[in-house]
View 1: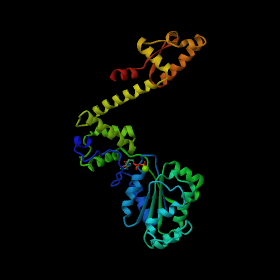
View 2 (view 1 turned 180 degrees about the vertical axis):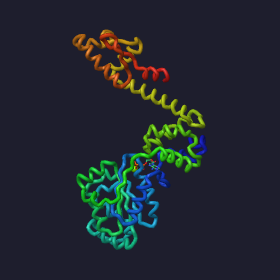
View 3 (view 1 turned 135 degrees about the vertical axis):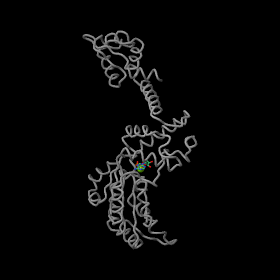
View 4 (view 1 turned 60 degrees about the vertical axis):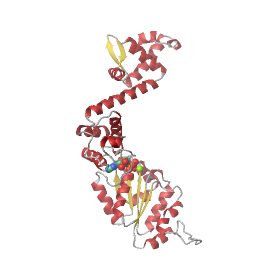
Length: 346
Ligand SMILES: Nc1ncnc2c1ncn2[C@@H]1O[C@H](COP(=O)(O)OP(=O)(O)O)[C@@H](O)[C@H]1O
Ligand SMILES: [Mg+2]
């Protein structure tokens, strides 16, 4: 098990949301904190999948414990769902007592119920929201004095708003974009994850490995966690207690080999036939290939067959499976060094 091998309580890199820390983005955290604290109405949080949007919203909530907080993992489909969403603020009605709340008077009830208390609504995955749904929360927040809203979504959300909800976009005063972490933040993310699971610093990773993880992921959080998870699982499999750069490179080669073999396996029959031919016979010209490869009868004439061979060879070259050398007037093709190494290591 991953945890026992490294003395952790649990695998730190399992894809679990942890909101007790949020690495980096200090300027943004401050902007959001101050903005919401000052009663700004609308915050927009954008970033690709895995950049930390959900975590960021969870983390921000922690600073507003004395507020009424609502977190919606998804925007409501129908605008009328907003009424029920505010139930925790409105409290439960007396039994048999009909409240008669509609989207048109919801803000009145909210104003009355909230009094001087403040309420924050966080809505995740808003790129999926309907215009009507967002239009209503815009209007409700506009008219409810102590209500602020943070909407999060993929970068495309901004375009959606521009195209069909300019009214909402114009009201956004807090704007946060999540992208990737710096090199030192990458290290900090790994370290914090490990230490919050009972481990020490970046152990079992070496500095070099952490640097390499940064190079490979460009500091993109979800990818960092994915690579770490992959490495610790492989280390456990191979009973390694340190994950150094050699181990990482070895695992990379194994993965590349596996992926390449699977890719070769999935190639169209004709490409596979040619690869097999080249790997058993060595370098060949398109002319020789056309003469020997099976199934060439289906071409009208030799010229057609050679043209077809050239096309297939070009595909194989583009994918890095085949290389060519010029010999006098013709090109000779052979299996690429890369593919050879892979086939040998595998
Ligand atoms: N700045 C950060 N600090 C700490 N963890 C982060 C950070 N950014 C992302 N993560 C982690 O990366 C993973 C993906 O984040 P998540 O919030 O699910 O992204 P999104 O909602 O944008 O798809 C989560 O496990 C999260 O804890
Ligand atoms: Mg999310």
